[in-house]
Image (cartoon, rainbow, N blue to C red):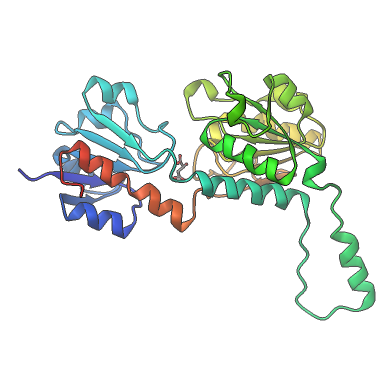
Length: 308
Ligand code: MLT
């Protein structure tokens, strides 16, 4: 019997070829002609971030046995609807951890250390001005980092923070194992918001996390707080954040994720002072993209294809 696998978003060529050596692979985006026909024939479906695997999609895929998510979050997959239909779901929870953690470090440094490139020779006066402008008000080691959501990524951020000498607080739904926290202190959300200079968000995209950070949370933060969000856009109430940033010009927010993506005209944070909007790029390293793509192995295993 032919085994059909439909790939709807980017997957590395090597991983796609490996799968094509074992199954009939079709690549088609959800918004492209031919998607419905391919889905109707699919035994396996491989998605990344933007394909919504909901009950309606599953109803149009009567032969589907496995959904593979090349990435960490499963918020675009209706897990209950998959379970109801005996469809296995596999993903790559560790594949982009290092990439995201390095990105968070880059964002922290971006926010604290001005880099002033020189493209021409400069005179003594300009040289002096550049060195004045390059003065950082703080070293990271003078600041307190708050990690909101201390799972795989949050924990590794804590490890990196300890290596740099940053005092770190963390907050999670569950009691955390102190040995895993690399010196970070578990505190309540209120304490984390009140005491952190930099807040890095690493919660997942479960529906309860929608607008986890809103008006009262922004009001509770330090006036010069820096908010970093590399988790999911919907965790932050964008309108409330825009209001907070307009009211407090010392606060800053670096947002890699948005709701919706791509950002639409009229989004409240577009052009907002203190907001730096980035294109959901935290996991975009070649290594992480490649590692996420190898979800094909688990998809193949679920379809009883040879994996050696
Ligand atoms: C993830 O959940 O793993 C990331 O958001 C993946 C991505 O960047 O597409």
